[in-house]
Image (cartoon, rainbow, N blue to C red; front, side):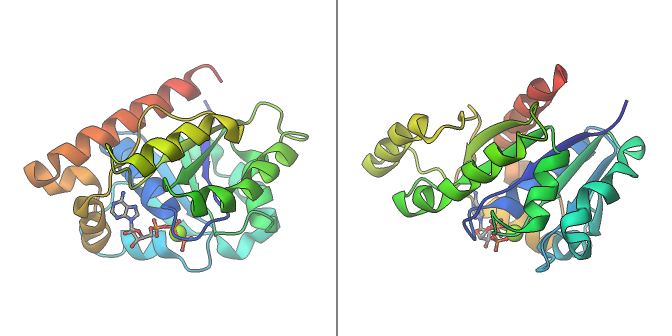
Length: 217
Ligand SMILES: Nc1ncnc2c1ncn2[C@@H]1O[C@H](COP(=O)(O)OP(=O)(O)OP(=O)(O)O)[C@@H](O)[C@H]1O
Ligand SMILES: [Mg+2]
């Protein structure tokens, strides 16, 4: 079976692409899956994360030089992994984003519940629709990141999401120091032990939902 490929994309900088990609990859790796994180962002934040020393449970490689040829480079790796998670730069129109969306089975779009972030995310919806001309089976989901439940703004923004044209995942990530700690340590969420227990539940729910989405492919 060839790898399931997940592209984490958004036009908006700082929406949580790297955080989502690494938490998901770490959770899959902790469950014994063979995971490659293809860091397609020249900031190489995912590579830095994995290099912090705690022993990240996935292979994390700098693929930023591949640019528009990323899909070709990843085709050669598909047989070696169960999952390939692509972390992309904040650039919907970049050749590397188009290349990631061309090969992906699932596009995940992290969004912070703020109107500014939603406006900026419209470009990624266009990029996903364009990618479907060549990759018609491409699934796409919004993932709410830095969720602050029970605020009026969050409720209003969440109310706007159904009109966005990309379905929303049930799982979401709250704003938590534990996620920043994982980056500082170079680890997955499991490494934080009981300190990260609530965060680990959130990441587990996200992983399970992603696995279910990709089951039928
Ligand atoms: N759920 C969260 N809880 C707490 N901090 C978070 C969360 N998600 C992201 N952050 C923090 O927000 C900042 C931006 O996140 P991240 O680097 O993952 O975004 P990005 O979309 O990859 O950014 P870029 O567009 O620059 O690649 C980082 O400092 C990260 O630690
Ligand atoms: Mg990033």
